[in-house]
Length: 396
Ligand code: GLY
Image (cartoon, rainbow, N blue to C red; front, side):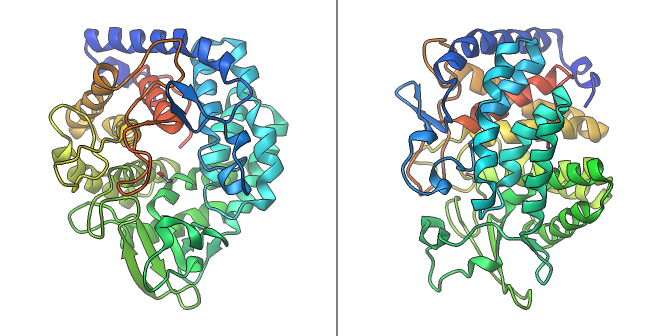
């Protein structure tokens, strides 16, 4: 938001931030060439995978929900360094996403078009990418169900997903998840660009619903809620990617913390800021002393399942909140620094000859893919570090 955040850092932390960005630049200058024609989602044995080579429908290939983060990280580095090569490679992704927009039956549109089209537009003013982002916003707005005030999360075909398999089966037309708070900034952006309040109205109705149904009394956050899609009546909630029903999936706490903070920044609605602070009050005492974040704040002590993605998302939100809530600056900024230092010191690979930066992300407590690299962990890490420089490129 502003350079004030940098002034709040100690001299040692300011130096550390510069060092991390320098390490990132040295590494990514090499990685970008190896992955220039890829859509990476995770890395195995130090090498990015490529969703373009994935078999199956666009949900698991070209339109996979994390496909915007590689380009987003390159755009962040372009903003940081002015190195044109980042921009050239970042632009590989968007035409592929645009090609599949009309086949996409998911709320993840914001996760895809914000770090690609909106970030490009903010940095370059390119009118073509603005059109892509507005088309995506229209498609996302079409998922709103006014009976339940929800943006529908998943689509036809997703009944087969591990997360959807419950007894009795979920009616996916009425299902929404906390992650969707991160898609709302595409709608806020679209209203600002077009002057048409419909997008913002939809986003705020969804955010108001989420305050009521996702945030528990103790400030922890539910992952999945189901409503009757015809009447809007509440049906049930589910543990989703967390340990189980009633648990506190750490990334979901991050999506909520970041999502309500961003909805406050976009609308000025005080309850969103209060909700973010309520989630923060739950998260803060649950951050382990060593700053490494578990997959679920209520997971059993063993085995240790870590989520560097959650750490980056929580950190990026805490940095914003540190500025928005001056009486909590020390606590919020301290938490962000603890998590970001922990990754740099204990969970990062800065070797330019390997592709991943962060090493211990987890897809979901019960899903395959524990303690491995995910591209969005790297994205959020870089985004958060750039915020500490006070001149990040705000998206969410
Ligand atoms: N949005 C899905 C995830 O956070 O893994």
